[in-house]
Every structure is written in structure tokens, then in C-alpha cells.
Length: 149
Length: 149
DNA sequence: AAATCTCTTGCAAAGGAGTGTCATTATCAT
DNA sequence: ATGATAATGACACTCCTTTGCAAGAGATTT
Image (cartoon, rainbow over all chains, first blue to last red; front, side):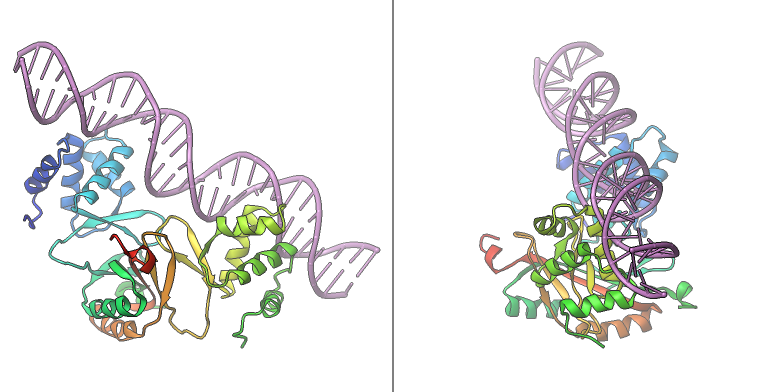
């Protein structure tokens, strides 16, 4: 089980899933690795990738992000700003972290917590609902934008 | 402070905010009151409303839902299915409830909990983040769809 | 190394939700 | 009733995303 996300290991993962290792996919992957802490939209990835390879098409970016999400490399997030945002998935977390979304600057920071595990147990019992995933977001103002609000 | 949501009380609220009480708005409101437990999208409201008044336009539905959300009658939700969904807001909750979204039938049920209050306190301290709102969703399978998953 | 098969690409067009425009119409206060 | 002002419906248009398709690579076999 790979868990360290190196360029090489992800390339191998693609090959194992019989995805072809095209230069476009490599460029997109590399760009993402250089921005590992950010939550990029397809458009943002597209802009960054164009510096390396201006020939690349937006549809290819969308398709590649889909694939990377499908094989578990990326996570597709919806922060309510009308576009999907992608981040590296850390497989070590069985349940992923939560997000703090700043309404001022739009920046997204992360927050880890296990409180929800116990909450899930309650819900399963009380509501007879089989939980597969959860999604917790906090909206507010970060330290920089906080003054004045 | 009104808290019981009768047709009359909401009409008064509209008038007080100097919104005009048009037949379209009344029809939309009435339709919503008849579906009080559901989480309807604009398109769904549009379809329902057309039975009463086929002349009504989709844009009017969007505009009316916006207004009703603005004056605090409705809550606008994003359950990740690509369209906004509206529900009655229960003002008695200072923090609103969470949602259980069934991946099988798409049905949305509700869940109340206060656990997040303490979590917010932790976040405010640890991340210096001023929280205004939160949004917690659980994805999984409801009792009916649960078998087989 | 060439041929082959299949997957990918880029482009342009199409989708789908939601918003803006604008002439026409309706509401509400007087 | 009447006039000021807001709301309506139709439609064009935006924005993000997906799709159809012909041309262009990967990878694999000969």
C-alpha cells in the first residue's frame, strides 16, 4: 500500500489502472504536487498548467482531475463557491478532515477532529442510516480577515 | 416574534418588508407549505406551482425563493446534487440541524445535535477563526435503500 | 521498428443551473 | 381610480462542466 505521494508512485498507480501516462497528465500531476497544500479549482489548475504546456485543453484538465479523484489521489470538494476544488487525499485518514472556509479571502484551512465518529454511531442507531461519508464545513473569518467582522 | 409559520404570518412578513403580495408569490408559498417536510429545488417548486398557475415563470420562482430565504422563511441548502434545495427554517434553532443524505433515493432526513457547539469553541481558540456558520452532512443509505449496500 | 489497437487529446458545441434585461403588467398607497 | 413603483414572463446570456468527434498519441504485438 503506497501512502507517500511521489510523482513516481502516482504514475505507477495510473499505469496499474491501465490509464496511459500522457505528458498532459504528467504536467497536471506535477503542478498539483507543487501546490500540495492548496485547494485548486479546475480553472486554476488549467492556468498553472498552461505555463508549462500552453497547448493543453481545459477539458483535459477536467478529465484528468476526474481520474485522479477516481483512483483516490485527489479529493473533490465543494466549498460553495460554484466550482469544484481539489486537494490531495491523505489516505492515512480513514475519515477526512474538515474545512474552515473564510468568507473574506476565500482561503480554506483544515481541521482534524474525531468528534464526529461518536456522532455517527448515534445516528446509525437512532436513524437507521448507514453512513458512508460525512462533510463538515465551518464558514467564518480567518485571523487576517477577522478584524472588522 | 412570529415563529409559527402560517400562510398569513408569512404574508404579513412580506408586506412589512415592503414586498408586494403577488398571486405568484402566494402560490409558491402555499405550495411550499403543503410540502413543508421536503427539500425542494427551484425546478421542483416550478413544476408543482405550474399545476396551480401554468402562467408562472421559472425566473419568478427563483426570485421568490431568494426573497423567502432573505427574510428568513426558507433555508437554501446545497446537498451536492448540483442544485440548491430549500426548506423551511425553524427559527427556534440557533444553530440549524444537520442532514442525512441518502445516496440511494436522494431523500434527505434531519438530525439534531449540539456536539458541534463545543467543537466550534475549540476551533476558535486553536485556529483563530471566527465561526459564523457550519454545515454538516452525512452521506449514506437510508433504511429503505440500506439493504444491498 | 512497424503496425495495430485503443485510449487521449483539443476543439467546439452542448448541458444545466442560475441571473440579467426589458417591455409589459400588477400591486399598493393615496 | 390613479399614479409611482415593483414584479412578471420571456428569453438571452453567464458560468462551470461535460460530451461528440476527428485527429493524434500511448502501449503492445509482430
